[in-house]
Image 1 (tube, rainbow, N blue to C red):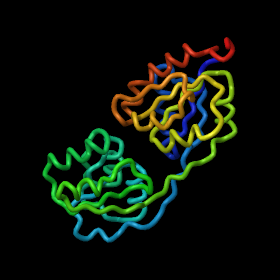
Image 2: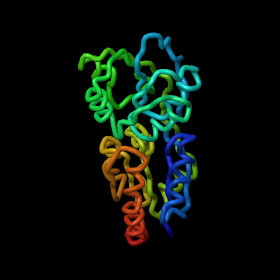
Image 3: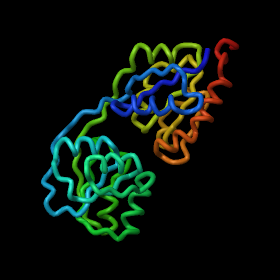
Image 4: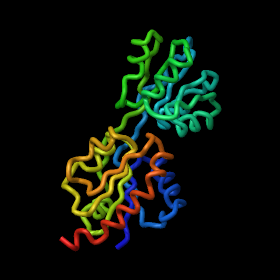
Length: 243
């Protein structure tokens, strides 16, 4: 049987990524969408008076900011291209830092940008952006606008992982990686395509037959590694039947 792709990215971005994969060579595979995290709004956008810059480290941060504030006049630093594009789509002036939290902090320091800055983020963050900026002498605060809670996989997703056909599992964060594999070890041969080494590190030992990590922590990086993931999955076809 050909591989199945298990998309665990929260909506609305899971369906978007599935459509992107379908447009890639070899992307005409069965795809199961089962978000591993539930994203919900939390709190409110604080008073923005006095802030020179906003900081976004996810598209969800932009989305919940847009729902909670009409301000579009404060420029923003965005962790990567997709987040910057999301901010621009709601009418903001955004600078893409092209990578991860380290790239974002390096760009802010290189630009000699002045605070105060406000990091608009989820309840669980991969890095303490505001703390690092304050340590560097740049006044910064933060506000939590949404939560990311583990969500149970669907019956179809569990059936994929416990079947015999290879499964390609893209994971977009450490928390989603942990949530996907928080259960019985998969019976199916699994290829994990991780957005970062941090995400790969949260996949339990033995859960994946093949682990691939994007060369940059963004969707473009994932797509560059997609052909390798696809080839690995086809090599694994029949692995379980042969055992």
